[in-house]
Image (cartoon, rainbow, N blue to C red; front, side, top):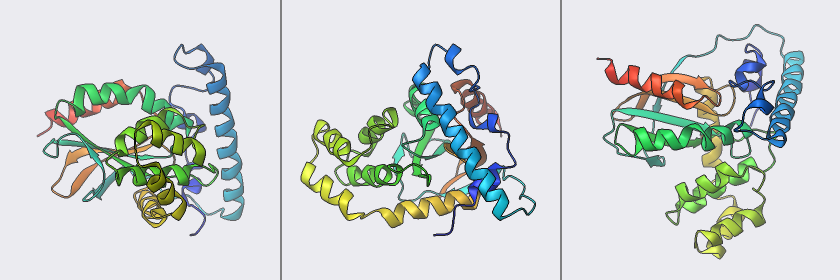
Length: 250
């Protein structure tokens, strides 16, 4: 696969957009520890280094960032009612600290107020980044868990623990969730779902996803969603406002 083009797209964005709540103020936020703040800052430094290398290799003018996307979601894991009028799709990297931030802050409220009430259906798709060595394995593991009806359960565990995605930890999680551990391990080690995960990455690139997490938030369609592209670990009030605007629109 060619070097991911999303890093070139990132060059058009201020680094602050990758951390909407502000890395400089991270340690003042009661919802984040000093260790988590340091991890996020390290993540920003790695992304900056990748951007600098990519710009040196391809100094052409950057494409305008996409703002809307349509996705066909047939066959993908869904949470909520298939009849929900609104849809959120997340392209996630299980080793990404920004994805963890969304998972432990905004997502629980979204699930309680919108998904569980039938207003929104939520899809999870994969966008493992090159510089996260365990991200591809975790994405494949989630699909292996789906074989045993445990996709969302393992997703919850991995989403909250991005530093515990080595194979032994994943197998331990499978045991905790009472899965067939031998079948799960064999599935992960076989890389059965590697091509499927890479297909997700290519589609994320196609719609203009420039980092993780990236969301498509919009009206449900018979095949999927037609909506706006939202990049970054946005807080719950942003999603709440956008969903209310979509719900009131004709």
